[in-house]
Length: 334
Figure 1 (tube, rainbow, N blue to C red):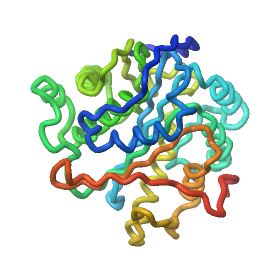
Figure 2: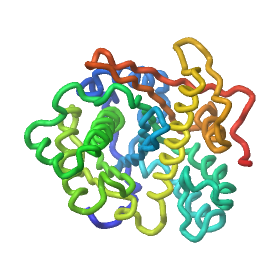
Figure 3: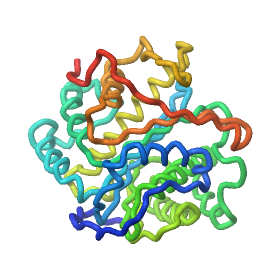
Figure 4: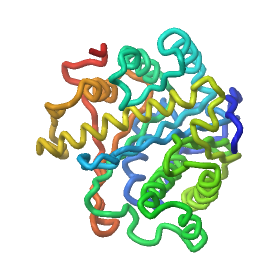
């Protein structure tokens, strides 16, 4: 669990597995929209030849008091099917952003990072994978209507502070739900998160791995290979591959948080069947990243879900945000 990752370019033999998202847990109110999205795009990931190792990188935001939503972003891809991106990432690190600078939403005031944003996200656009975002309203309390874990899981949860436990459970349950529909039988899974309060040390990471295995058991109808949980700092091999994949999640998470807060502040939050313009007071970086989310020609799948929490599962409002490109295109940074 403490060794760097290695990219396997092995492919899985065809299994005839039909991808479908679990209706268990959070799947009770998410599976219908995600299964519909799979059926609508049958020639894209994950309905293709699969790699031996499935990577999931998670990032989350919304900690600022002025933000109205907690945001969670997951980037899921087969490493073996993204050799073009891996080759570009090496060139990017050599010629565009050297010196191990990390791309992040908060750090885009730095001139080199700002100039690197467009080429960085253009490369991300070609990833064969799935970028999934959730914006969860801070009003309404917990995402879970009853005890989220059994006695053993509840005991494991005690390793984290009370104010971190809800965030941890959301990340684990949303991850398990996504993997239920995006993994193939026998695939190895590498689950990676940035180092923070959820995985601040090896002890917490060990507990997180045990808890994640218990959560996944309730979502899966097929068996996986090896499941490994790690952080970008522990697992990266010095190439910054995992750091850069995590940065894609970080950048889009930050943009989604600012976007949703702007929509609420301007009282123009999206309604079904209505076209809603972007808020007027967005920063340049969020406007740019929103245009990336909307660009129809990109290979990477993108899915954004907004959850309004109510008392009880049936009162959880689920909306899929469909991005549309009008006039503005993803082109250049200021």
